[in-house]
Length: 407
Image 1 (cartoon, rainbow, N blue to C red):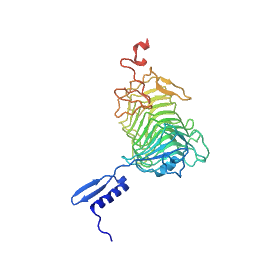
Image 2: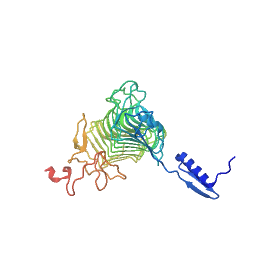
Image 3: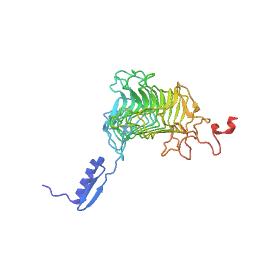
Image 4: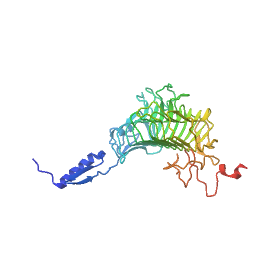
């Protein structure tokens, strides 16, 4: 039988244990009445995926995986998965949790370069089903247009985990020819059903979602606490942005929503884990233009919801439909003057120099950059909508604010 471990050997053993038990946040030593915390350092790792790879490879840069699903099986906290440009089949699930200090990041190495399409004989209702926590999904294109048999996609990116970020993705042509049913779907769905919470949906381009005249399919659908910022959403059969179930404390700021059934729906009901209502939701600096309805409340909503400095115009049935006694503040009811707009094709939602949205936004705390990454700040000004207009030289006014331009 071997003798007791000497102190240096003991510390070495503890260090090894700490590496194995990293998710526990560290290991604690006790000597008499004193305590010493040995914290394991987060070791970040990289994995690589490419169309020319193989899932039998180790996932290195020189020997990448072939599928995102394979990378999702082997990630650990602190892993960044770089996905090279090319086409990949969807219908996979990611389930591994990161940690607050060691998030798991899936990133297209070129924005919208990694394109996820339906597989042959699909077996899932989502292109990407994420159930892990502390996960980032950044820069992918989800293209559901080319159906190849099997189960049709109802959602592009479905998220059931907590503290996740869905950023700068292009999600389009999802569920265009499915039956309109209460099961519903969304381009990007953030769901509380699996007790997920605390999500971010930022800087995404979501369009052409859902069958015609179907109110169950939405652009961005959220049923928990979340931040929804600087997204471009258009041609959605239901709502461009829809809150329901356990949604509360949601920030909806700096988005552009157009040509959809409804622009922004703030609601609560059919609760999974709460008793509602949807309260303390903040809706500010959004452009909601040329939808059937503009901004409306449905179901159980609280008295602390605020609607501040939104441009809401030319929504066919009504621009606003809030609960009795609820008021909106600082609304601009005018055509937004996009660079180029039509209900078909690819609209250019950038603001022209004559736009009344320039410089009219509410100053928000911790602002996100705009859709293109331009900053929003008290120095640059706060514009309404997903795009921040280029700042003009000092003393020069945009045409919408220049007295000479109106003569």
